[in-house]
Image 1: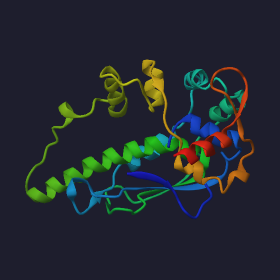
Image 2: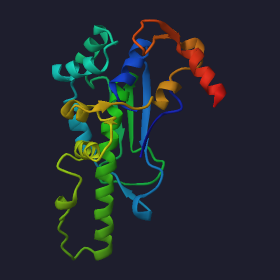
Image 3: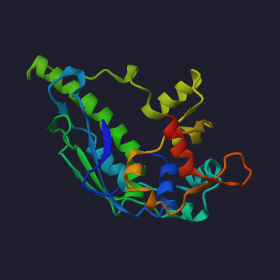
Length: 244
């Protein structure tokens, strides 16, 4: 499944991306994100949409704790205290959710969810929403196919726990990938729990939130070598783009 910026609106998920929006003063810009998938699972002809109830529960209780803030400060030493104050006060009260009814039959490229609100919080929600809907819809679709195959008169019992991806799937997968030899993860929670290196990529939606280089409030960042010197990141990016 994919989480994409709606083409009508100016405007993946880590606090670093949220920081980029914050520093460019775009974190309160209204954006609309669509969650959709490209192909039905199991080479089928339909998908059962599931996970909406979990999403609503997650958004109702969304909050950064002081433990989260402390960890992020270690990961983002250059971020100012104003950014962490922004995170402390963040919730989903300004976010609107439009969705199919849970259990609906859905098809590729239909927006299963449409999330509308300030781009900073919407970007932070992305990974969890994808995780919830992907897994829930996959299992629900598999179950529906089995029901269709055996008909309404048979009793079906689910026996999947022994082979499931751990009691806390995403975190379990991250942990054991690390045990197997990976250096780091994009899963910030697992990074905090297990002391793993956290890293990732920038978001397509961040790029799309700018119309041109003229929208940049600043072109410089501090060099990664700790010297304190300022680097023109636009000049560097254009140089590497030309080489590529």
